[in-house]
Image 1 (cartoon, helix red, strand yellow):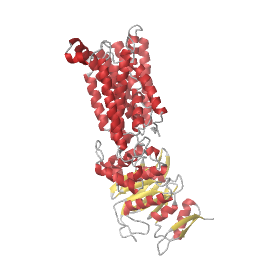
Image 2: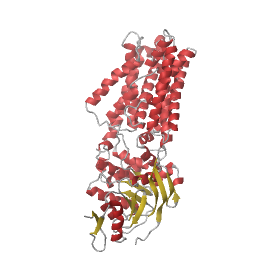
Image 3: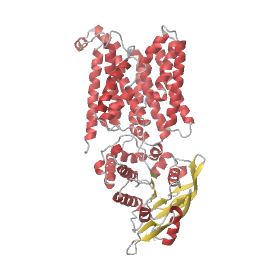
Length: 332
Length: 275
């Protein structure tokens, strides 16, 4: 078996890329105001406005956000050698939720303030978790996870306190709705900064993909393979956190993609290399695009996108596992 | 006598332990370039601890120099280039092709963002072939048997090409022919000193923890016997008197006797427990 695996992985990535483009195209056209390619190309002004102000930003965010969450999920699972690892393990989404709730309660009620506060909250939570873990001797994976759990619990408590203080009619509903996650309120003006942060951090992650795989090796051995384990892990986790925080601060918490996409990718490639990282991202993009299309077309009103990410993703994962496309060996 | 006997590795009064428990209580010995040194001792005597201390995985005191250079002063990356370390069980927990695992060996010499080159990939394939794993290059490391994993890690050690090899029971899961193949490869890597052959100094040395005294007596130019965290004897199986070696080995293993099965002036020693 010379090189068929590599060729197959490239073919898989290409197929997933085409699937994602198709989903993106569908996402551009489907919705409350159906658009048609013919009318858009014909220069229909109403259609163009809907396209530019609603559909395009939403589709870009769904594609990029899904890709980002999938790729970041791969990073967390690999670095922590844990198939259940997710960004929230070190507190990013609970921190972002608390940040969003804080803004809804205390800051001027603009979209930008909520997004900014969520972004800050997510980074702050991870910063505290990583800072605390650095105090522990040895700085092992386990202490990062434990510090993450502690920060997660603190952020959840803060969130609960904020919910208690919230006006149940308006603020509490806003908080709950934010936590459910949606791509509904995305506008062109809202996303450039966060997209830029996300893309830059993603580039960093892709450049470091070999070091990320090496971080999955037991610490002492990795160090003797020339990996500056402590610093490299910190850098990779910060990059992955930036990736996730920049997405969920705009969209709200989107569950399951970070867990699911890397598993689908690994079940297909059966290894952990650049192609698996890429495929994790592409599968995440497909999942979020399709989930978002369903979220806005399944019912008369918008539904939270997380309902659909789990609804499509979970059966697909089960199908792959039951089909025995296994060889899935992640945790030692 | 070997023609080139230069002291390459010096360990001077190494102490180390876990927490407050002191495992190594002042170990000192030297090793020559081109020679494989076997570390022998009962379970828990500190062999693994010594290798870990040399890799700075646990804090230690004392002086370690290699090729005249103080290892304690090196940065992590410099140390990684200097030492090729094979732990008892490797901690590779995710699915990767065996070839990728071998390619990890180039990492200490690559830039952080650099990929292994085509030439290095060829070298890795050659190393896999040398350990008898050419067919398994594209197999998932996780699906290999424990013995195949050890062969794969040996291939990684070959491409690392570091001056100092520290190997912790690298042959524990191997069958008889593969054990011999591995020991031959190690002896080749360190100095081309096959059993009975001449030493050609390569500027390399190897410390290998072994539980099989037959392998140790045949392939190691020098044996360091460790008991309760101290070095109780340093033997040269090719040169020392047999009764002296028996006495020393009996201190760590209980009463043993050695028999020489060699012919034509070439020693081949076996060790048996004394009835």
